[in-house]
Amino acid sequence: MLTALIVIFVLVYAAIALEHPLRINKSASALLGAGLLWTLYALSQSDAHLVGEQLNESLMTTAQIVFFLMGAMTIVEVVDAHNGFEVITSKIKTKKLSTLMWMVGFVSFFLSAILDNLTTTIVMVSLMKKLLEQREDRLFFAGIIVIAANAGGAWTPIGDVTTTMLWIGGQITALEIMKGLFIPSLINLLVPLTVTAFILGNRPVIAPQRSDADALFETSSFERNLMFFSGLAILVLVPVFKTLTHLPPFMGILFGLGVLWLVGDVVHRKEEELRKQRLTLARALTRIDMSSIVFFIGILLSVAVLEHTHVLADIAKWLDTTIGRQDVIVMVIGLVSAVVDNVPLVAASMGMYSLETYPPDSFLWEFLAYCAGTGGSILIIGSAAGVAAMGLEKIDFIWYVKKISGLALIGYLAGAVFYIAEYNLLH
Image (cartoon, rainbow, N blue to C red; front, top):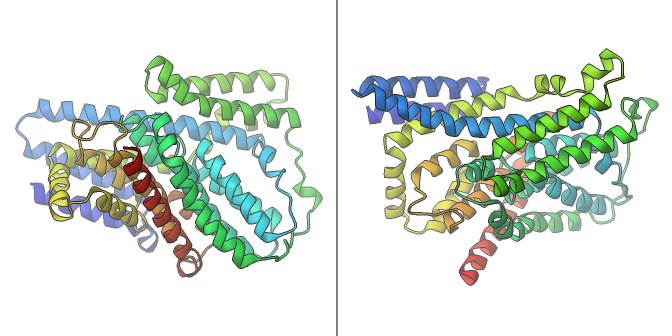
């Protein structure tokens, strides 16, 4: 039975990694895998009650992550519907490509820490179409945005799905992950930025022609600022809510979602129905990426089967015996996340290592958050941010390998080396 479970999981994993060549949505593969794995596991067990309890336990953990992501994604959609991100992007003005690169890198880094790497990438890559005329420049900037967004998402509990999973699972706490990973994540960005700024030199920014149609006419300055700062405040206060109430983060995000919904309805209560519908939360709920949500459900439930059958624990023992060094094991996991999705990798790691052996905020969990979050930048298919940029700018896989992968790799290694040295000095 165990062999069959492992074979099914590997096949599902391969289908997820080869989503684009196979032209089969990874959400379909994840759901099919979850169904097959739980069915086989249930049929092989004599105690149906035990299987039911284990499924309920796994479902509760999965639901917490899914509710949190749905709430966060909806808040971002509401802000975007009000053109709220223009509050930041309108401030980016310069005539040198190298200066613009630094500005875009830092904005992406900090914006990703507050929102998430996927949303930040979509916003910033879309902005580059308004700032840069030449496609080659836009592609280069898109690559740096992917690195910056993934680096920024790694050091906060709400910046990356994998870090959010570790936070909700109790492996890390908000304050400690921010203290431990801020500088390594910043180094992960600074190294590629320094190299690219040197390459770009004094080249000028060639901006596209702006038309009257580009002007914002849908929302007022008051509406943009109100929804942007309200959404931002809600996302930032979720870790505070968890600390004060000890309730799960999804309760904080749902509470904030209700507040933002109320604010939106009050602001637009006297407007015509058609415009009101476009700007309220009800429409935002229809615009969130449900395919990604379904993927998380499928992959987390699939990994849960391997956890309940102790397959992951056995793999952890084998890695410890074969490789021995924990830092090397985690760095390998980070490099593998450049090839395959980092969500199942982190989910598997959470099942491989117990909180009894590795308590919250230990070296393993913090370093895993860094490596899984930033290692995906090395290849464009390694992260949700990369896939989004690939779709928005039609970036070629081979082009990314030639131009960006090397920069992402040296940034990844530099940040990893710093974190290991920092941890050994402080502990």
